[in-house]
Each structure stands twice: as structure tokens, then as C-alpha cells.
Length: 248
Length: 90
Image: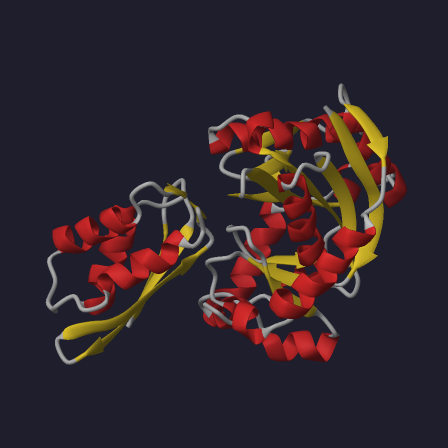
């Protein structure tokens, strides 16, 4: 199986989610399995499919800071995607390429991230259901959906992290314990920079590409014009709409 | 009426219920759990509409299990949703 690797690019939140969906559709129609690396410009919050936008996101603060927000097609939690601090990936392939058991397929793909982090000198461990930890602290979160016979998994790796900025746009269920919660998250979350201060963002990205492609036949490619056109359509018709983002 | 809970070893779930008289008008299930296919959540929520109150937890769970039949829930169970529902309407 020859994978298509799409090099790192930055897009807004709506187009990022639309591209993942558009590529999933083209894979369902017979295109190569694809791995894509991307960033978020501007920084954005994504929420899981089942989350309540108003419960999870401080929309006023997002507006003040120029932070976008979007609902994902995948479950899981709210994520602050910092333009500078985070690297995101997505994997789209026919379901039969992966274990049918969902946790086993998380373990497989998260293993590629663990390999990447190991190559940078970090002892990374898959933490079911969908996290990766280094030194017992979360460094990566991941989410998966399966539609039309295609598995889509996307996830984030923290190169650097600013928990205070993260919680300036994420809501907590009890404002009275917000400070305590932020302190708790600072204890439970780490980043590549915290673990290995000399590892640049470029080096981290290089390691991720190496880890994701190890043992695979692959070629570096780009999105096709048809995928880009479909992504633009999906962004306009779904990911930019209140009907989608505010549906829960 | 809204109740939320972090499931030990699982995910955070919340159940919100609107009643009209002694009948459930609408229920909403939110959280950071996973459900495949995702659209099954709409069936689960719809299965609780029209339920007379007060409700039996067993009946709530049975409706949710039937609605989620064939779907795969990760990080929570239909029983967790039912328990939260009962707390929300208590």
C-alpha cells in the first residue's frame, strides 16, 4: 500500500476540518491512504462531536483574542490548538488497513507518535483511551471516526504549551475551582519543549514524519484540486456554520 | 435540569433534560466520549422523549440500549447515561 504524505501546512480551523473530511471522502472513493500534517492559523479551539459549544468554549474571549472555534466530526474533548505550540496530524485510510477493534487501532496509530517521540529521546506511552504520555504527563490527544469504510484519526502533539492561554478560551464546569484546575492541568500536561528543550519545532515535525512513515511505502504528495474544492465546499456548508458548530 | 459526571476510567458525560408536565420533552447527552457511528446519539436522545416522569432507571437504560444497539460507545455506557438522567430529573 502506497501512502500519500501531505507535508505540514497551516489553515484556519474550518478548512482544516474540511480537508480531513474531503480526503476521507476521496479515500473512500479509492484514493491512496493519506497522512497529513498541519497547523492552525489563527489559533483555534476544536470541540468533540458530542460536546456543548457553550459549555466548553468562552466565545467572547475567543472573539477578543482572534481564536476560531469549530466542532469536529470526531468525539473526544475540547482542544486549544495554538498556532505556535502545536503540531496536528491526520490519518485517513480504508478501515480494513487497521484493526477492527477501535482501541487497538488507536494503539497502532498512537504507536507511530510514540516512535517519533522515542527518536527524540522521550519515553512515550499510549494511555488508553486516546492519549499519549511522557513521564506520566499527557503530550498528545487523539480522536477517531469511521465513516464510509474509512478510518479517520486526527490528533495533536504539543511542542510547547501555555496552559494559562489554553484556559483563557476553554470553559471549566466550576469557575470557583478554575485556578486549582489550571494548576492541576499544568501538573498533568507536558510538551516536547518541556521534556527536551533543544528540540525545535522543525526537528519535532521531522521526527513525526519519520515515525509515521517508518516501514511504509509512501510518496510525498499534495491535495488534489478536487479535494481542495470539496474542502472549500465543506468548510462553507458545514464547518463555518452555526448549524454545525452550535448543534449541541 | 443538567447533571454531569466524570466516569472513572472513562470520559466526562452530561445529561440535560427538559420536561413538559410529567413527560420528558427533550434530552441532550453531551461529553467527551466516543460513539461510532456518531449520529446514533440522536437516536439515543430521541428514545427518551415522551418518557413519563417519574421514570424507572431500568426503563431509561433499556430505551438507551435499544437506541444504541449496533453502535459502539467508548468511555461511557448506556447505563451511565441512564444514571445521569435519573439524577437530572430527581
